[in-house]
Image (cartoon, rainbow, N blue to C red; front, side, top):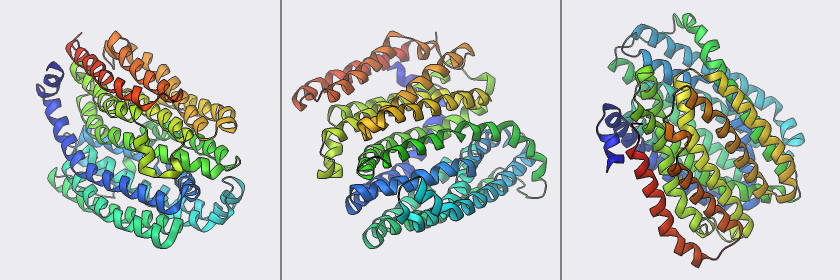
Length: 486
């Protein structure tokens, strides 16, 4: 099949296959264990407390955007570009990323610890979660440090080492998350997450040391100040891209938790969102090797590899989304009787559709990052944030969890529609990505399946439609693979 030859006949394809293989080997097992642990934790905590856990994680993640300071993308881009051509500068960038990550992580972790009482009482409507939020300060710190470390490893294309680290972290996380939930409730789970991230950081340190030896990188903290301009040129716009996204997500969820039975609704949303995290895992698994290779190729990138960049994550996401949309009962069974409702099915369907949009957009985002078009990303993410908050303000009071899922979908849909013409005009994406009958057909199939769930069509009809939907989408992807050289 020509669509497979597209991947096999180039060095990019072989490097991508190698990167994805190792990403899947370690991260796949790790994510499967984490996903399983999340399901058990959701059942042990119950819908309302699981919603509280989701709000704690959302709060920590929102502040973590500032703490991370865009260092993951910065490390990946510059190390991928310079690891062979300029080892000395690569060592300085490594030193810079470590020092800034430790500083910003500590600063914002301290802020969360001090302001936890105000946040718990006045924003998330849960004064009883003050101590849990303070434990979350540890999560915030280690997330900032890990983000810079993982970005550096991706820049080295050390996907085999990342796989080993993820495998060990996954094996370690499953028992402590389950035991934390069983013996300590929500407090035990948050402590378990913090301990797991600390373990992850220690393993990353060992893996990075091996890479500096492999590439003869003279790692040193001495001259890191020489690379400070990178922070203003690249890291600042990178963090500004997310400076409104995180708060918008958090504010929208705060709308939900402040509604009647808000944490029950939040539990429904978080259960559905767990599957979104699975899609994000797919995107992340492909993002590291693809971003590293796109950055390494620079202006010499071929049209075929542009297609690989856009098509890969989107194709995998759509193929997984079709059975989930045809049989959302799978998700309901996984989480238990509390989630066996039409409201959960509707929320889940919208989340899956939103995930397909995100996986398509991820290829556009990689191209923009690799070519340094970050300030346009700041604008598009700011637009996303405004749309998200405004939509949630209108839809959440009326529809609860489905309203929040709808707001998320609308925001991603409009954002993608805005950045796609820019990428096409700058020749960052192939023509089919901007418009083609086949790509349109794929989107129509996905939208049609969501509509069947909105109208609550019987499982019999959805079962009949399942195979034809897969065949239509598969044929469309094959046809896209045939005209990638145009």
